[in-house]
Image (cartoon, rainbow, N blue to C red):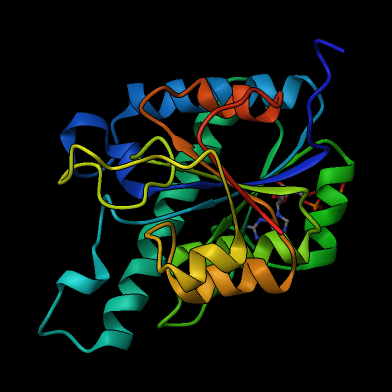
Length: 237
Ligand code: GTP
């Protein structure tokens, strides 16, 4: 019916950049609030929500050329933890119950990631925000999203990003770029389509996790996606 979400449990991947709004750096709280209002609407229709946040608004691991890669990735993980706490705070202020779990122990600040506890939180009506990526360097936050989606048996991975779907080539560079409505995991990997890195895409294929890629410049797309409205590009088996 009209107020029934299409998905029982989702894993929402929020890019760090999207949290910066026009500032491009750090957190733009009005932007974060708009995003969280859309998440609250999903919460209110009873969808169970796990969230993985990126950290690109604080730290771009791959642009720190002279730094040791492992150390750069550690800084990136801390950036995601800051974003997780900020998003949790806004969601709580909107009336959601939220728990933050981090893949790197920082017990004074957040719960450690424990899969069974996360699932219990969902059952009790809590949003769980997963910080620190996978907890390992060399893995992107998209890989963390793919991993957590598989672990919590999410019905779909919602990748909220800066483009409105998947194209055959970069739509910012080519006027004739064509947007796909749907694709298979195999096509993403074989055609090297720029959706997520191949480790993350392979993980989704392996676990048959559907992915919906959509634009976050309109925050209410999160709610529309959860309600099954046809937006973005869907990737499935
Ligand atoms: P249930 O026992 O399933 O109802 O879950 P709960 O999260 O309400 O209870 P719990 O006693 O585990 O947690 C109470 C509060 O402490 C919640 O706000 C948790 O987020 C928080 N909390 C639990 N474990 C930790 C931790 O290791 N570190 C931090 N910083 N907070 C924690």
